[in-house]
Amino acid sequence: VTNSASSPFFRTLGIIGVGLIGGSIGLSFKKAGLVHQVLGAGRSTSNLETALQLGQIDHIVDAQTLAKESDLIVICVPVAKTKEILQSIVKHLKPNAMVFDVGSTKMDVIAAAKEVLVDRVGQFIPCHPIAGGAQHGAIAAKDDLFYEKQMIVCPLLENRPLDVQSIVACWEKIGASVFQMGALEHDHIFAAVSHLPHLLSYALMLQIANAPDAEKKFVHAGAGFRDFTRIAGSSPEMWTDISLANRSAILQELDAYLSIIERMKKAIQEQDTPTLQKMLQIASDSRNQWQK
Amino acid sequence: VTNSASSPFFRTLGIIGVGLIGGSIGLSFKKAGLVHQVLGAGRSTSNLETALQLGQIDHIVDAQTLAKESDLIVICVPVAKTKEILQSIVKHLKPNAMVFDVGSTKMDVIAAAKEVLVDRVGQFIPCHPIAGGAQHGAIAAKDDLFYEKQMIVCPLLENRPLDVQSIVACWEKIGASVFQMGALEHDHIFAAVSHLPHLLSYALMLQIANAPDAEKKFVHAGAGFRDFTRIAGSSPEMWTDISLANRSAILQELDAYLSIIERMKKAIQEQDTPTLQKMLQIASDSRNQWQK
Image (tube, rainbow over all chains, first blue to last red; front, side, top):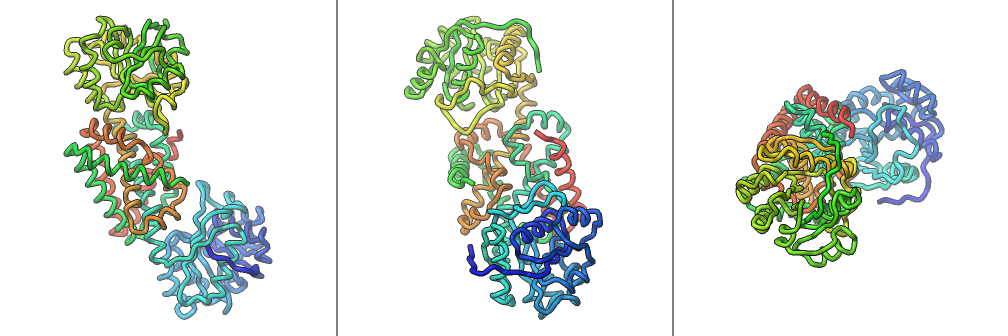
């Protein structure tokens, strides 16, 4: 967790993609006095109007206007769309404007930023707030979405330390705990603790849904199944996007997982009680030690 | 859900294994006026004394005495121990005594019952209450553990219909919803919706616990991970026992699961967005339709 002394201030914040995350950034940055005005751009006019009515943004503009007028820009779109958003704003960015994203993967976003921004990539600060919810769109945004949540910042060598400090200070002002780490490390950690479990949960749900006796199975599925599959209710678009964006780390974690499953399977086939019980014991002990 | 008219009554209930389930049966059967007195037998004297103090049982006896004096006997031990418990009581059973179990698997328990009870197997009624908790032992027992919970009964061809009806009526009296089904069907349904997710959850926990950067991963693991791995905190002994007892159905479900994972993996490797998204969409839709 990084600390910083003085409070940053930006005259104009531009939010591209004013959904749950973007709208919540608008609300919480305004509430914390970090910005004077907020511009919003996006694909859905009705969603932008909701964001305007709810005070998340002050004006609806197009991406070019937003780029020309903003001192701080946040890109809140599916990670696979980051490149095209950057292409639409790169020629219009103020020389000292800072841009950050909120994507769940970082290596692919940074590759896109380097490709599009080239020698101006130092203006781009990769971020990932560990916050969200089941609901989507501006309608779901909240001014305390990031309060006591983790915020991962993956600074680039090209970033000016003062800019990074300033973004970190913004996140801290809205109550987040900031962690700085490299993008590669970020992608591997979240492949293991977030992306892989999402895929595993989706897969079990798919198996039951496709079973000939699905209805009966759903009748008898209980609390364990409910918790295990809760994340399978997440947005398929978002998780397809993340799975492909972070495929290298995910495939590596998935192979590690499959080798553990094969060891379990073998122990069950061979009725090898001590091996199976030892595996379950280690898992159970570490789950009970980790209480969150 | 089965309905029955008159209330059954047993002079003496014998509980072998007075833990969370056994103790809760003692409390709830007494509370519902289903039994006159309750005998308890088990391995741990201190646990039996707790059960006695808490009114779950009225007398501590050995298994033979329990068998000789009880009109209704419930076996609440790990499924792999069922055979040895039946062997210890078979010679002492009253001619009209009914015996039921509460094991999470049924085919193996029935095989043990047929082997040990032979022509008296009709006295054995296989049951599986879908209830439990994180705590263990008599100390954790509650008089409402089965209230509004599912109770699966897998009657044998050899059972007298009146006996089955009587057991069903007991469960209903303590507030459970009774479902009758075949043992093979039971084992396949619970392999899919309970046993498999437990193993998958244990496996992910094991993977993170064994990672060189485990500590860092646990710091960043969030709510999705917490829910996905909650069941990995369950008893390793109990789940080793269940995994081996129901290995045939579990291995079948595990192979079906692995083939879904292989399809997902291929879609990710080939960056096949439509296929991956369709899979996640079906899973997500059915999770959101199933709300429990």
